[in-house]
Length: 154
Picture 1 (cartoon, rainbow, N blue to C red):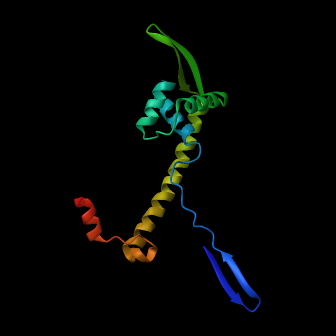
Picture 2: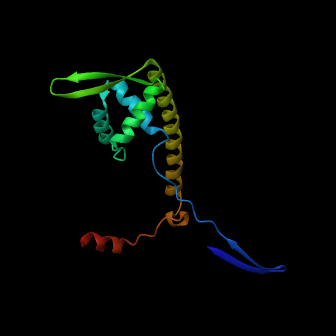
Picture 3: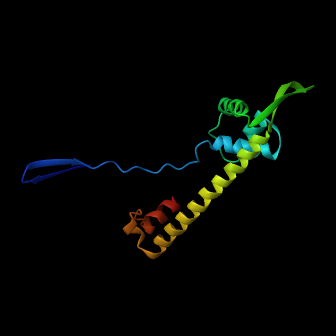
């Protein structure tokens, strides 16, 4: 949005910056934290981990990204892998947590608990605002119940 005004020194033009929309999502390195958690529960193969991650609702992780993350984590000493041979198929790597990986799992849990406390407090205070004020004064969309009812009946 551009605002124009005329003053004693002439015309001025000010461009109002666009409103930055908040990005929902997970903390940075969430995949690493998630893998530490899953492998901490039980040693697992990469494919099993991919299925478990999808079961958590994280559908944006592809197999290539998962295996890259596991290689980096192994290089960092957080997980170790061994080849497991199978009579019914090809050998597969089994990943397990190292001592250092277990320590980082605890660090992540603490950090996520702190984030959870902050977010809970934030949302509680937000809910208090919504309950105590007119939602439209906060910029909430105006919803016409007749329009909503008509859309539902379609």
